Length: 325
Ligand SMILES: [Zn+2]
Image 1 (cartoon, helix red, strand yellow):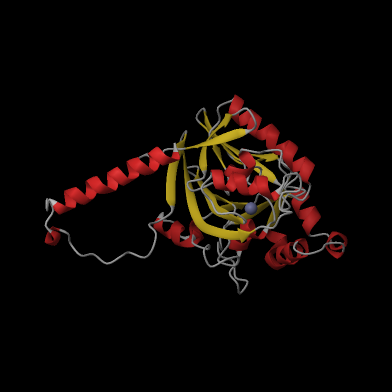
Image 2 (cartoon, helix red, strand yellow):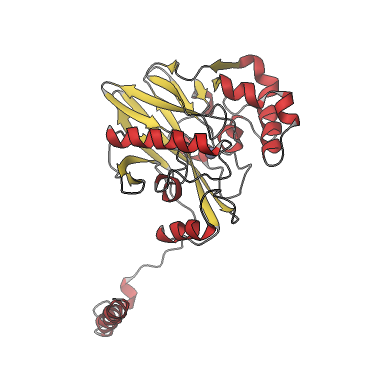
């Protein structure tokens, strides 16, 4: 198989060399253009009933992982899954995409990106918001899924100023209770201790303005929060529904699809309660597959949405097709 593949590739190269030699394309028919050296805007819109939902790309983090990254799978199995996705071993590409919902009456942002505070290869959300034609002051509401830095850092600049001056901020009550508790912080080790400190940096001085909701509540018209505990103690997903259509925003329930949609039972170190997170993941993926739901997730490859198909051993993400509205 390999041999014939090589042969046919050689033939192909030979054929293209012949075409070039035939002089069908004179060299001066190619215009010289400088390389752009940057990506186009990461903005993707879709319609859910009368709502317009916009995926806003924030960037990617190439996270080195060690042999203990997945507690109940060998590093060989993890590297094999990365290789199956044409990715190098021991590096996890973590993609970030925030979601904006325009209900017609309100502009609602679900999670806020990294604000460039995690890696230089992320922090493009505000640029993409501008490319989408929206100014931060127009955002009416920010709904937070959980308190990991990549989801809340965009609330503030490095200097502590509010990025979205007119937005009401909604957070899951159990998430607030866990991360803002001094006793919990005193027992925490790194990297979780860093997350406790960061949650205080973001929320302490604006605590009076933050509204806490109980997962299960409708947080805005057509946006219902769903308890999805395990990744963090109060981790929350959201169902967005309008006019008989819906999208399930899974937040960090499934993370990188080439690892944890394919192998939902795997327990990565960043799930704070591994068994609970895996059970939540299985339950949500199973429902998404059975009900053929349109899903979205913060760490799926941009535009971070698609459908979930059941396989013999797990699930598969079938990405949406980029298409006009
Ligand atoms: Zn995350």
